[in-house]
Amino acid sequence: MRVMIIIFLLASTLHQYGHYMQMSQQAQQHYAEEAEAMEELLTYETVETEPVIDDDRNDYDVLIGEWSLYMAEMDGEMQYFDEDSSFDMKLEFNDDQTVYLYEFTDGVQTLFQDMDIEYDDIYVSFICDDPDILPADIAYEEYMVLFADDDFMYLYLMFYDEDDYLEGGYTLYFER
Image (tube, rainbow, N blue to C red; front, side, top):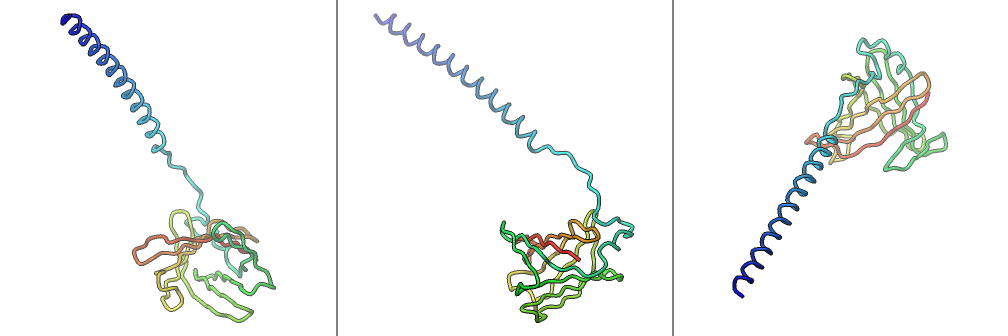
C-alpha cells in the first residue's frame, strides 16, 4: 500500500511539474510577444516636416500685416469672435521681425505687447513673458504659428510655469 501511495504521489508530482513547465513556456512565449509588441510601439520613424516659414525667411512676408481673431478652440470647445463679441484680439506682424499683440474688451484696448519673432527648425513663434500682464502662475506664453497663407493663419498658444512645464494651451484662428 505504501508503494502505491508513493507511486501515486510521484506520478502526481511529475504531472504537476509537467504542467508547471508547460505554463512556464507559455508565459515566456507570451512575454516575448508582449515585449515585441511594446518594442514596435516604442519604435518610430522620424518624419521630415516642411517649415511653416523657410529658414531663409523669404516666406515671412505671408505673415506681414494685421490679423484678427475669429475662432478659438478652448478646452475642446470652439468659440467664435466677430464684431459683436466683447473680446477681440489682433496680431500685427512687421517687416522688422516683430509682432504686436492687441487685446480689446468691449471695444477698449486692454493690452498691447511688442514681441520679437523667433525661429526654430520648423515654426515661427513669439513669447510674452511680461509679469505685469500674465497670471501669477504663468511665467510666459508662447505663440507658435502652425499654418499661414494669404488670408488664414492658426497658431497654438501655450502657457508655461517657471519650471518650463507646459500648463496648457489653445488653438487660435486668425484671418485678415
